[in-house]
Image (cartoon, rainbow, N blue to C red):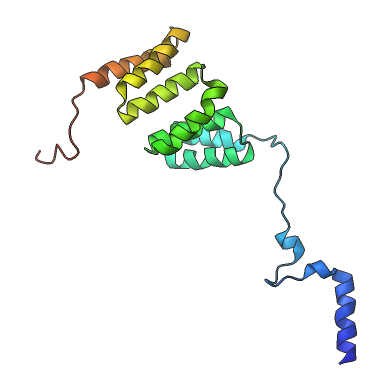
Length: 169
């Protein structure tokens, strides 16, 4: 019995006392290996933008969220996250992102167009118009700003119907 105890202690000295865990994971397996340094590769952001362009809004939402986990203050990731949330009708998440972005890029045309479009999707046409006009005033040659104003004009003329209003057809 004494030989087993000596053998056990000898192996402990070799491995180190921290190698044992109640869940049978060694300390190397549970060690925090998260990279807290600057991420030189923006692959998550590139992939998220590609998914958004392909209209895969669920995937773009997830990838923009992952990009924010890597670089939490990235305005491009926040803007993409908000736009993806809008397209998924997750207006609570989109509003949170826009409120976070407003002090940082609130006067940029990208923000004004996106936030206006978000309000258009929500049915807040007057608020949408305010943001679209501000974007258009910043750059009257901007095609997106002009298209958003045209979209708003068309939305005003489109009749609103109650949910299920077309069931009898």
